[in-house]
Length: 149
Image 1 (cartoon, one colour):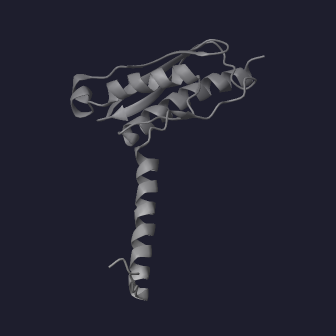
Image 2 (tube, one colour):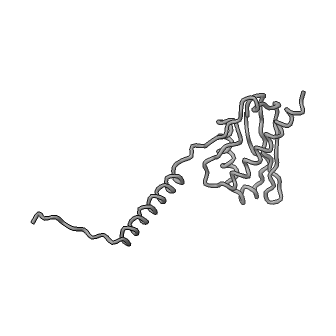
Image 3 (cartoon, one colour):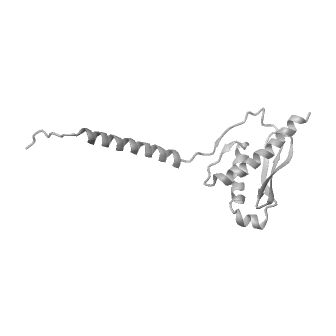
């Protein structure tokens, strides 16, 4: 009644179970990587390189054949403000994510004081367009510094 039990395992069953376990682990790891918040990974610039010529610099985005200007105001050592101007009603209608994404992106850039960040977002194309416009404006501030005595 309390005798030994004998289990017979076939090689194909072991292989099948192993494959299922490995696939499950891969799916679990991928889910963790994709679902855990990234926390706004940033790429810090050295302090010696993060100097600007104070002023307001602009870059242009063309949406629906109309320009939108992204303006970045900097002091000698920091980014002070980032905002969009000249967005028309038609552009607001056809591109409703631009203004809220610009506010979120500006907040992150001002917090970390660099445009080289990996923002956590569900709208990577819109964010990429806006981020590139901010980088272009900041490059003008750097270029001015290289030219200025």
